[in-house]
Length: 465
Image 1 (tube, helix red, strand yellow):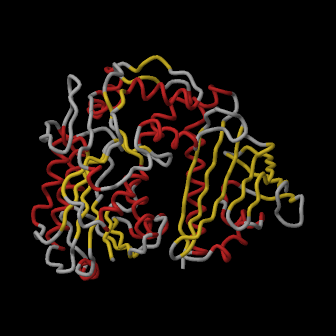
Image 2 (cartoon, rainbow, N blue to C red):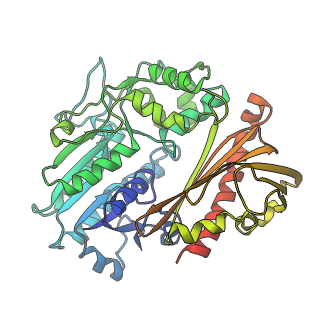
Image 3 (spheres, rainbow, N blue to C red):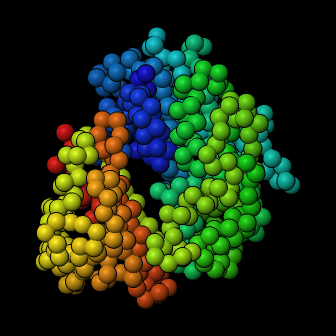
C-alpha cells in the first residue's frame, strides 16, 4: 500500500510513520518544511512540501495524491505551543479545518483511495461534570476545543462514499519523547510540581505506542470504520495521576497550583487542564484490537522507566531523547560511531571539543576517553567510561568526571526498513541539587538541543543519501 501521512514530524505522526514503514507500507509525508522533515523523520519516506490551509498544491504533489491508497491525517498546530491569542486560535483552525478541506477537495478524484484515518481529540465532547463519562455515542460539547475538533471531523464531508473513514478521538497522549508527560515531569523533578487546581478533574490518557498501533491496525482491517475514542481504561483524577508519578519517580509533590495561578501563567488553555475530560470507549473492544498499555498504571510504568537513574534504584532524573533515520545498513554506520575521534566531526565548533586521550587502541567496555571543551567560554575537562559495549547494536558512555552529577548516554542502532534508526537516550542530573535544577535546567536543555540538532545535520550530510 501507499499511504499519505500528514503531520508526519509531530509526536504521533513520527510514531505512526515508523509503524507503517515497518509494516511494508510506502509512506508519503506531507510537511510544511521538506528539508527539515528529511532530516528529522525517523523512517523511510517520500517527502513533499505544502504550506497547508488554502495554499495551492504544487503540480508534483497533485500527481502524487492521485496514486495513494489511503490517508492518515494528523495535520495541525500543537494546541499547547503558546497562549491562546485570537491569532493563534485562528492558526489552530486553519491548520486543521482549512487544510483538511483543501486536501479532501484535491484528492477526492483519486479512484484508488480506499481509507482515510482522521485525527481528532476527545475535546470534542467538552467538559464532563458530576462524574459524567463520555463514549462514542455522546454528543459534541461546547467550547473552543469542542468546536475545533467537531469542525475538523466535518471537513471530511466531501469524501466519496467508497472511502472508508476512521475518526480517532485521541486522549491525552503520554510518551517519554514529548507531549503532556515531559511537561508534568520537569516541575516534578525540580521540586515544584504538584496537583493542578482542585485535582479532582478527570483525565483520559493513552500511550503513544497504542495510538500508532491502532492506526496501522485500522488501515489493514476493513471492518474498522467510524468513530473511536482512543483512550485507556478508567479516567484518572489529576490528584491521583500526580501521586502515582511522584511515587514512581521517588519525588515529593509540591503544594497544589491554584487555578487562578494557572490562568495567569498560560491563559485560556488552563481551562482545558482544570476541567474534567472523562472519556471511555465502547467501540475499541469490538475491533479485536488489544492495547499494549490498557490502563493508567501500565502507561505510567512505561514512560517513567526512561527517567529512572541507571545506577541508583528508584531515583528520577532528566532525559534527553533523539532519533534519526539514515538510509544505510548498520554494518556501514556503526564503525563511524565506534571511533571516538569521529565525535569531533559531528560536534559544533562553538564547544571547542577535542579528544585528548583514549585508554585503549579500540573502543571496548571499560575504555576511558578524556575530552577538553569550552562551554560558554568556560574550559572544562570531561572523562567518560564506556559502561556498555554491544557492537553493532548498542553502547553506553558514562561520565566519570565532568560538569554533570550524571551524564549517562546510551546509543542504539536498529535495523529498520530501508536503513538504520539511530537513537540517543541521555539521562542526566545537574550539580548543586535543586538549586542547579531551578537555575540551570533551561540553559542545559537549550545547549543539548543545539548540540544534537547540529549532530543531526552533520549525520544527514554524511549518511543522508
